[in-house]
Image 1: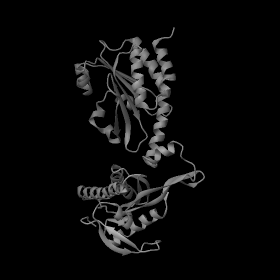
Image 2: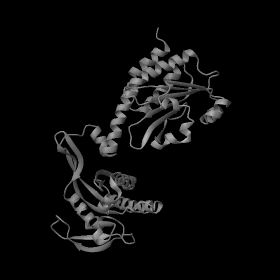
Image 3: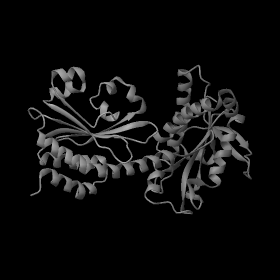
Image 4: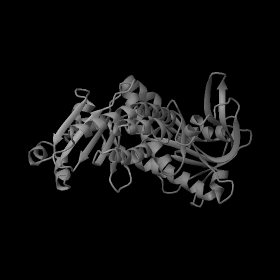
Length: 390
């Protein structure tokens, strides 16, 4: 006759595999664990990640509540909260299982237990679930059963963790792939590549605002700061630029030396001026963030950006060698934006607009006359923004 643990294993192999991600897996698994006889009232899943900013993700199930999620930055391991976390031995790889009664004594050792004690919890159990990648994955459980879990209930929990292990491996591989695509390709383009849009020559024509930005004075900064110094500076610069673009709905497609290329796709139906206004807010936002960063860190070299905005048609898709592709945009509009950015220092303007963009946005603009752009046959009318520092 099947035992509760064997039924839980079977559920993981049949129904668990059908879940699409970690939150949905936890939301479906927790009630099955309770049904199997383990009186869980709160379950946490914690997963170490391959991400440039975050060391771990956490999902929390509570009876009668939707699953919640949180991310922990790389610096969080130095925080006091991590140092006094009951899960610390699991995350550091020094223990496979941790058990603590939740009472007044343990609450003095682990501040988290103060809240759990007030909620009537009686025991905390954390289990390490190791995968082939050796990235620590843990499940922690709290119960309000008097005396905590019995030996039989702990055995059922152990069976459940065995069933979860291959599912965690599967979801972790998906998450790593998604994280790599988002980080190296972009939040909008990454999912397309992950979904299989990788055929060379597969491109589409779309209207977009082309947002081109580069760092002024890059060469003397490189000579003054050295390799590591310029890397740190570029990371700060691109973080400011990337955040300004993303908060307005754009996507940074690539970093080219000290420059960044981003796009704001135009809607096929609707007012394109809305998108142009967002791109313009991103440009103003980037300049404001740089000014604030310069003021907050007067001992570092001040960073100044040249930003060019143009609107036009681009070819967007996979371009490159047979086994090494780049998902990017090309076209005359992209070249014009890059050439426009190079004119910024000459005109002493931190943001330059093409005539097409100036006509498409709502904001007041400042005419800077007609200028010749390298590689562009006809002279172009160029515009700037009034009341913006050069």
